[in-house]
Image (spheres, rainbow, N blue to C red):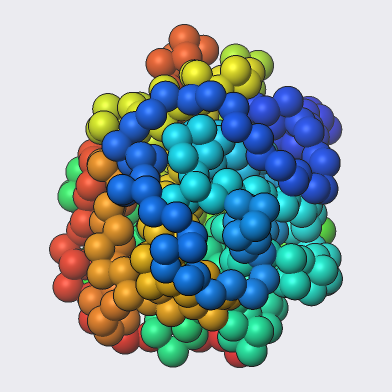
Length: 461
């Protein structure tokens, strides 16, 4: 099957929508210092404990914490204009709004949090270069976009003694042999695959007996594909297409070949882990070829642009696609999610409902608890912040995300819960949600619950 000119135009259009889908207005400035003290609603999640003064405790500092100026500086290594820019830009906005709220309510015991944001464009070399530029300016990194990108700086983080929160759900970040200077959160890609495929099998029973597994190469695609293969084995599913690691963003021929293979094999379920633009391309070509099965895959591969009013694939997506997500999406009503949405509403920023704003709040809340612990230990050096992070046995989010722990074995730390969602065109248009609606909250499949996690599902080569 060759890509028809009409479908080429459609995929280019969806790609433009995805690239321009920055709900915060598309600002791609590479530096954001001085987050300011924009007023926001005070919530339990952001109220600091009883305030003490810096001098009371003789707090140790080195880089990124200035007690005289009263500031803590954090770095964000963010893909703002690359393939995941439409997801990452609102995550950064979520962090900015959260820290504005913290600062307006006393900061970290009187210290104001400032953000230094850099656009990596999802290029590994850029990521490494920007890490090197920021490591002598920031106390810690509030997030690091991308699995191979975070892999590339992980050795540096360890040798430099600096903490980072990966904006990536590679299972290696839950492996205690790899994550000494990292804080995982959310179900990793391989557990996500076990959950999502397990959930779909529960819902559809005999309607799912065959599966196609298609993914990007590298830690993102292959970790997800490994989880899909483990789920298929546990459930007795026949893998009729195995293109794990075989599709490439720069090679349209691999996308067409994947769509052709899906059409030819006609599996009951496609597990596809890719960028959103690649996902829409393969989906559209397979749809044009007559494929009408069920679709799922790694959550970062989905975009609400798929179900936008002018999307030619919105009806097919709405009827055939299900995803997991690592935190409670916009559709949720927990106290933590409601508080985050209220902060956004009170921030004075223009935005439309979108799930990934909330990921920014999750990341920021983790770092908030780390900084409070470091302050309480009177050691806000870069190394002291790492040490404080690794004492946190229970980080809670008031329902916005599953509770995380950073002590114990890999099997004890790994997150196994997620939310199952379905694309929702009507909710996107009405503003009721960010284009997805919850079909099951806080879900863990039997496969994931029983999986003995002792090391990363996909081992780095």
